[in-house]
Length: 179
Image (cartoon, rainbow, N blue to C red; front, top):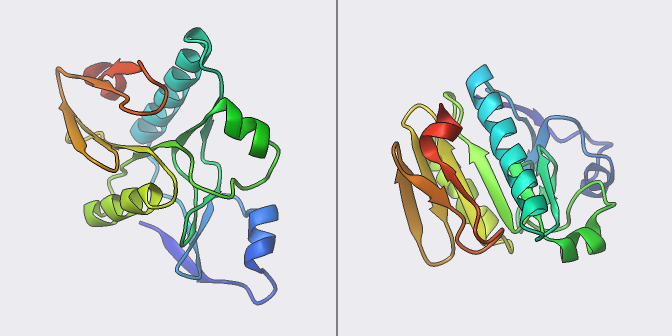
C-alpha cells in the first residue's frame, strides 16, 4: 500500500531532485510514500544489493550498487529497491542527490501490498527511461522475472537467475535469495 499526498505548493520538481524527501517517490505529480516493506522483503532487498555489490567488486566490473535511491524516469521520480550504476555513470552522476535517468539495472522486491499490474508498469517505465534490465522479485510466489527491451525471463524455485545485459555474469540461486 502506498500513501499519497499532494505535491506541496512550495516543493518544485527541481527541489525534489536536489533534496529528495525520504521514502518518497514523485508519481503523476503526487508524493507517494514507499511503504509495505516487510522483514522478508527487506532481507531480500539487502541480500540482492549485497550480492550485486560483491559481484561487481569480485568480477572487476566496478560501478556501485544502491538501495532505495532516487532516479528520474521519463515520467516520474522513482526509488528502485535495488539498483546498479556502471562505472561510467558513477563518474558522470555519482555525486548527485537524484540520478537524472533510470539506473541501467534495477530490482523491485514485490511487497504483499503491491499490485502486480502496477509493478509491471513500473518495470516498463524503467525500460522506457534508459534502463536495460529490470528484476521483479516475487517472494511469496518464489519467482523472479528478468525483463529487458526484448524479453521476459522467468526464474522459479530450483533455478538460478542470471543477469542478461548489465553486470554480466552475475547469477544467484532463486531459493538462496528467497530462502
